Length: 198
Image (cartoon, rainbow, N blue to C red; front, side, top):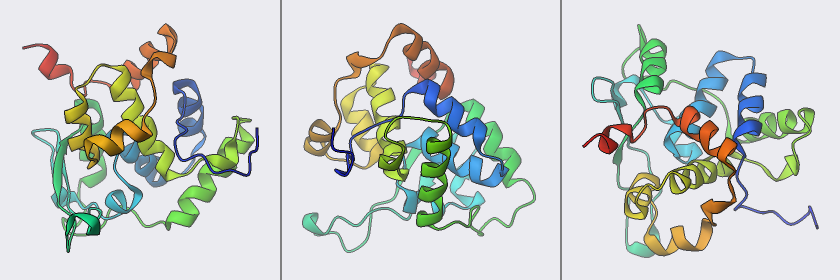
């Protein structure tokens, strides 16, 4: 395989994600990686999050700095409100406590974020370490939701994709083992569990 070709469609297997997130020493950096993993947001969407953007009683977050889709005639991106799991909501509640409501929660460049990720993947001997970036965390979130049987329309709304983009860039979810599936359910916690109860 030619590792010089950038594969934007690769994702992270659950066991590799667990090893990676455990390896991040700085709590704030770890929580930004976890935020992107738990929401599927783009890096630029996540870095602009403030405490005021959460409704933690409802386990929601509003992504307000979203991608502008010029081909669709947008002059600014369309904000979207998405759910987060109760478990992750609790982590965010602790992070936001006593913070200025309109201040950004994280300060790291996308280059620094990606470099740290590549370095850790390399240290952990994860295959194709140089291929990974923030985009692949987003890809991982979408693949995990697909594996759990979440409706494609819901996934598209959550990720800010149209249907054709999603179909083109997300592969088969049948590649996961039963062990992978158990880990995926554990990693995403109670996300989408509520609707299964009704």
